[in-house]
Structures are given as structure tokens and as C-alpha cells.
Amino acid sequence: MRKIKNAVAVAAVTMISSEAFSQELPLSVQSQINFSKAGLLRSFYESDQYGSVQWRIGQARSTIGGAKSPSAPQNGYSDKTTDSVVPIKVLHSLSGGNSDLLFGIKGTFPNGYGNQNTLDGEIYRLDAEYLQYIDTDTMLGIGAFYEVSDLNSSGIASSDIESKGGGVRVDAIRKFTAHWGVAARAEYYWGTTKVTNPITSSFSLVHKQGDDHIYTQAELIGQYRQGDIDAIPVGWVLHPALGIQYQHNYLESTANNLGVVSSGVVGDSEEYGTWWTHLRLEKEAPPGEWTPTFLLGYEREYVNNLDKYVQEPSYGVVGTGISMLTQGGMRVGVEYSRHQGFNGNRINSAILGTLNFRF
Image (cartoon, rainbow, N blue to C red):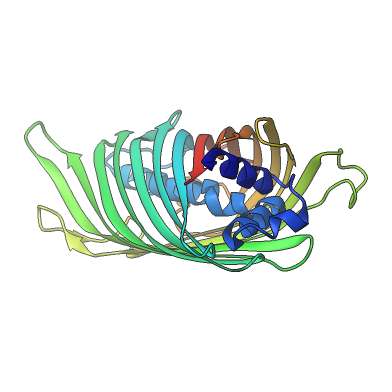
């Protein structure tokens, strides 16, 4: 019986059930059906833009810090990395059918290459969030997260960078017309960063400080099929999107183990913001069948006070992937995305392996 119920929910989420039948399902499932069809769940679940922002900020800090070393070059820097990202998300329905609990764990494993100052390591994040469905077109979420990272900088300067902290996150999804909806998020992070620079075999310079940030993002997403635009193939859906994000970092002024007081590499405040426009084409398929997707887009920085050595304001964005919703209700997939700077100074690539399921 449980497998039958799961299969029914899976069929509904992939939009192969009739509208009349879907209305018999809990509000949480009806909303997920609606948001999935509109392309809004991808923006909610995935963190490609968020991850790109964090990595660019971290690499820029490392580059600026390294360039302050004696005899370090003052030009010719680049920021190139390939990240492996493995997120697992579990959705649990609460009694009444109007709300869910979301649990997530994600590992990110960056691999820098071709940089005069290279950053490598690992980042882990845990999330727990309460989701409330107001109606089939509206969802609100609030939760908490914890993150820890261990990175190594090498090249013109060597250092170990350890960060840990946590924060709160709020989300909102709203489908407001037959073709358009918006997915927005905001989070505040309280954390500390410890940087250890080996000076000799027996002495290292250590600086530990508060490292907080606020991150906001909003994305306007559409859905169009052949009935709307003749050029779209039958069985496929086109999702145009227009997004914007902004992050502000607050860095504490503290003394290192030699008593020298400092904050960040450009002061006690950092700003980074981008806007983007994407076109995503994906096939709609029933459970048990693979769904390919293709992405093409443009991204532009509108603020960045960490661009002292790597200046790359504009990017082309490409991506492709394949995913499947199984008969048991589990979604698995693999995606590749690339943010290619037009000046060739910054390239961020990511390989994403996803596993989502409901219980």
C-alpha cells in the first residue's frame, strides 16, 4: 500500500495526473506539483549561484592576501576552479498536509587550477527548514544551517583557512500568473575564520576573526511550451529566468599572534553582487524516464570591491544535465555548469550530483 501511495505522489509531481485527481492530494504535494511545473523548485533546491559567489569571494581574498607577500607579482592573476558538489535533501510531510520539514546535507570539494594562488579543500553544510504552504501558488520557509570548511591556499603564498559557523535562512516561492513566478531567499551567517600562514618550520602567523555575511537572491522564472511558442519541441518546456543576488560581508578587526590588528584584505566590509538572465530547456517525462536539460545564460557583476587583481565583470553561462524521478519517489541526477568569464580571467565549473527524496 505504501508503495502504491508513493507511486501516486510521484505521478502527480511529474504532472501526469489529472487536475481533478491532484486536488485530492495534500496541499504540500499539490504545491510541489505546481512549483515543479513552473520551474521554481530548481531555484529553491539548487545553489549554483550561491556557491559561485562564495567561491569567488574566497578566492579573491586568497589572491589579494597572497599578492601582499614580499616580491609577489601585481598582475597576471586568474581564478579557475572545478567544484564537485554532492547535495542530499530529504522532505518529510507533517500531519495536516500543509507543511513539510526539509533536511539537507551538502559536500563541496573545490579544485583550483592554473592560478598563481590556488585554493583547494572541502566545505560541508547542514540545513533544516520548515516549509509552510499558504495555497498551491505560495510557499514560505524558515530554517537554520551550519557550515564548516577546511581550505588550503598554495602558490605565491601558503596558508590554511578554517571557517565554521551557522545562521538562519528564509525562503519564499510565489507563482503569480500562468507563466511566471518568483523564488527568493535570504540568509544571515555568523561565523569565524582562522588563517594560519607558515613562516618558518617552527612558527606560523595565526589570525582569527568574526566573519559574518548577509546573502539575498531573487529569481523571476517563466514556463512556456509548444502551445505558447511554436518553436518549442513537443514534450519540452522552456524556462526563461532573470535573477539578482547581493552579499555583504562583515569582518571583525582582531589581532594576530604577533599583536598586529587587522580586518579583511580590503577592510572590514566586502560587497559582491550579480544579475543574470538564463534560458533553460528541459524535457518533461514520467517516472522512470531520464529528463535531459540544457542551460544558456549571461551573468554580470554590478558590485565587487574584491576585484583588485582579478577583474572579470561579465560571464557566459552554459550547462547540461540529466535526471530521473524513480517509481519510489526519489530524484537522482547529474549536472554540469560553467561560468566562463569573457576576459578569460575567471572560470568556475561545477559537477553536481543530486539525490532528493520524500518520506
